[in-house]
Length: 408
Image (cartoon, rainbow, N blue to C red; front, side, top):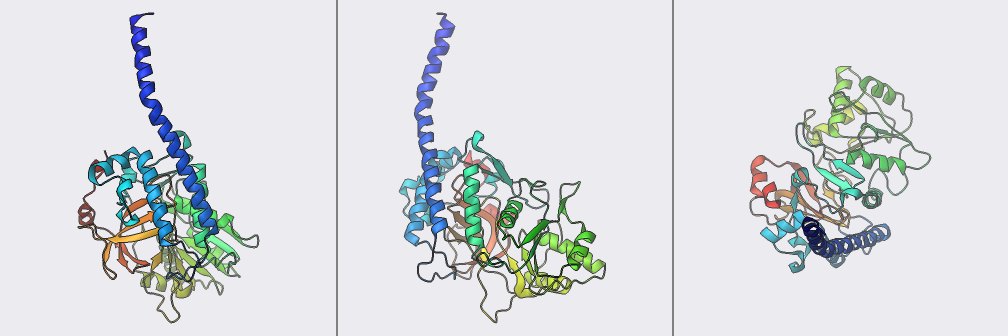
């Protein structure tokens, strides 16, 4: 046997001996993550009311159960994500030393732009969702497998059915119009995947269509004349789904053409996704007034949602009390398998009720990425809910003291 061959064989055996325990440990962790997902999936599907939760939802998970699940998932993600493990070892402590989910640090969304922040191996990554971001921004990446997409959709549907316009499986409209491009044109949009999931689960008596397009510059747009004329022909209640900037495009066109629509009684407007720097931004009050003036939809039938490509769960507005001014900002709440915290950007501690800070979200449905996400959004703390205020400034982001260098 040649000396060089013996050296190569010896080196190979040493590397195999070093790799095998790590590989076995990773295989074991993957199996535990899948077991965790199956347990969570069952919990989500069987989640029912226990008493009357403060949020007013009919779904409820006890705090001690949520705490146990969060700490268990934190340990599994620590073992399977080397970036997370290196960051916690360097700047915090391992999850085994934590006793409450509020000790879990938030992972800034900009980290999703710099790294493949996932527990999935490359051959397991079936889909990736990109953040839309503001114009010119680098996109975040949230990887999904077949299993994680099933969990994403289970979380989405169970929570959506608690809120308007779904109200269970009873839909108050006969036709859904999605202003976004169809899924095949934007396969990396988590928002459109959400819309498509909702559309596919509508009752047989409800029809739907996607009317948006992707322009030559890659931006979303609307065939405005065709959409306006189609809406004019509607004779039964419909629900429009879209981003704020697509609504502004449509309403600006209607005003430019001196057109006002009067959508059939009971029609709804569902807005999410923000403005992304593509149109002027409107306050909620101005947005509501414009919708009522140009589309003929009353403020109480204007609905909303808060979500992100980096999350697997969404937040919906708490049902407003009778007599409340509907132009007031929405107060969002997440499903029982997620929690929010509003943090002081400079100190990192939770703010008091009525104070403003950055939103941290603990989402148990993010089994395969990061259960704890520190957003770049500011919100007003309301305890069980939060009021979105806007995007954080550069100074506020720097106050978080976390750059991508912390994760290398």
